[in-house]
Length: 313
Image (cartoon, rainbow, N blue to C red):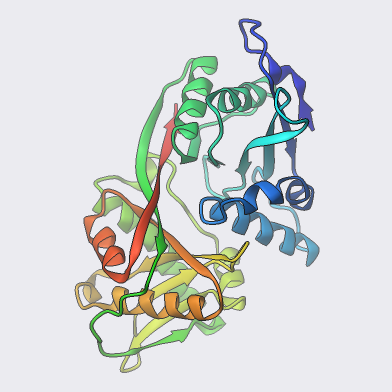
């Protein structure tokens, strides 16, 4: 669905941007894949989430009850139909924050206006700076709210893998028999990461996962466990590659097993598997967690771009 009204702001000033929104991931990919493929590391979240959504719909999965749509922003002043930005709203957890990729400031404001004009309540936004900040500030201006950064994140790409010091144990794929453990650790990951950064999940727009999502990842061989003498001590996940890029995460070690090198060993092993499969490898960190940032950089990960997670109230 197009929103030509987004070509003007509330003051009547003409804007060259047109916003198109669809709830069909296949339709979105048909329009946006060339744009996404230009920088597949930067676009990894949108690409992997959208390809997964398209796959699940093709397999007959029901549409989710939460908001799920994708948007492209076109610049009608450039080459006809030029896509200058994309965004999506697919997060299954409240407040269902948007995810935005880089776009001109005017495009971010046009997207904000389109959503407000269609009566959509927006309480969170995540993604690349400065577009996400501009978008959140414009939503706040239009609705009388206030936007505040809840989390600073950083995207890293693996260069040459640096092998860590060896530790006891070995990596193995998770199975459906591990579902309860994996779900508990996926859930604990969000809470523990927030706590380590001095936040609580309830403060903002932190991720929550469902049993269905974790089961889907296990069944598609995207979760690995580090096991020592029959005891599972660590979990590392990864997303299937999109446009040749695979994203590692989450990475979780329960408190009683931390500080023993399991995270470094598991992330290195999973990264090696992904590299051997022909993928470029990336991951996100919370900038407020110096431990994880140090671990990944020691393995050979290098910073690509800073992002932010904002709450809008």
